[in-house]
Length: 253
Image (cartoon, rainbow, N blue to C red; front, side, top):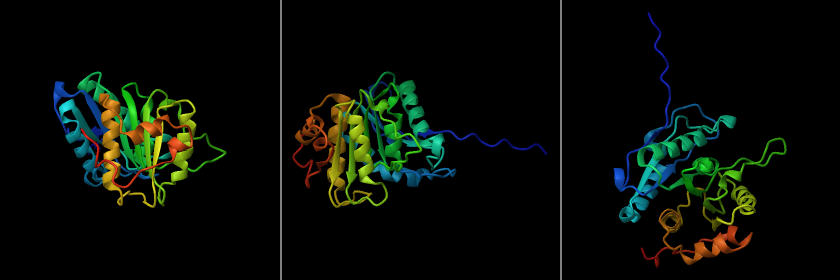
């Protein structure tokens, strides 16, 4: 009896949230949570849950501008060391976006381990911006090279992190942002005081901040004053910008 070939795993884009075809003028690729090590295939439903609500909000906000959002479905649940599977899938997704829509600006928006993937894959030519929410980053290790930041040059970067995050150390995202800011003025970071990894206490404020950033980097709309101030302020001020309660309630689109 002939042996069946093992199916080749492939990353894929979820269905479009937003306009179709030629109407698209900007894309957000949503990178869900992941694990540090795992060869298992992600559950499409559970993986997308961490980013789907944000994707829908962004699609609504950018509908008139031609914004499409896609959830990236990974081949593996894990980052898996030097394989960096999630980052490679994010790079594939950026290339696939160009194939589908042509030369449109792309924002990589990731949560947790997906935030690390967004930051790592930013060097793709189609990517003009990165939104990393509570990004998981590795502990500093003198025996290993630090997490790279050169790929962030020329990109607009926003990091959001809860100060009480027990899963993804907020101090590590601050250190990465500090290194990136030395070569790229377009880096800012907001701290959500007393909130944890899921940023549940300030869910609406984080979503409003993400919308403000995405509409600015993809379509040239004016940033809110807090984002402008964070981008303009020197370290550490622009990298420890507090996210105020109620942020977004007075924003006009």
